[in-house]
Image (tube, rainbow, N blue to C red):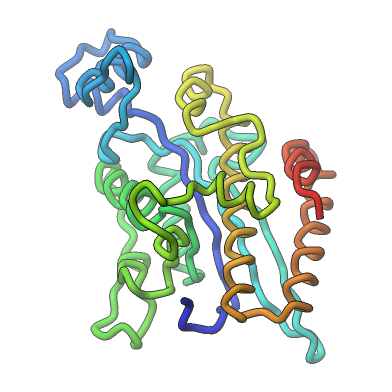
Length: 279
């Protein structure tokens, strides 16, 4: 199921995006006086909105990235003892700065981080969605990211985040069924006893964005990144990449990390995550 051993640095990531009002104005020739809400409504209409489905799926090209959350997992050896270190990041950070809500800034900083650190990437439905959004919206925003985009001549000669069958970018959903049998992240997380969605869903993000409730978007985004990690941990245990003792130890260590983070300013949403994760 997984060919390679676990790498020293792994990044569990998730994106949130909304229909791009500025893009709708350019695409549809709308005047600048059209409000953001009206422009988004026009984009939904362009995408085939109906009475039964007033908010249809909008192509990735027309989707503005508003948040990227990522959890890093680093394996360290101290005095011959294996330790695991976690860090939770988001773009924009909390509390957010208006400059950090800029889409170009969010995408550029995330891709720069990946290019510099060269982690193993893990997402959920990330191959067909998140990665495509990053590429297409990076092009729209005139971003350059040569180190992220670099590809070796042969797969074993270096990292390649675009190789569909490599593990430098592991899309967990590709390990499971296709079609109607595909589990959502929320479904899989909930059945594994993890928190899953805790009050906010993907359909709420556009309304939160229009209300400029950036904090709640980022909190929801971070929860998805945390659920992605927990599902991955269950997968690597299933594959025998961690012993039962290592698996149990890492779960408790991760929970301790969340306890510490939840006690910090802007950490209340992590307390909610913990409270919904019986261990």
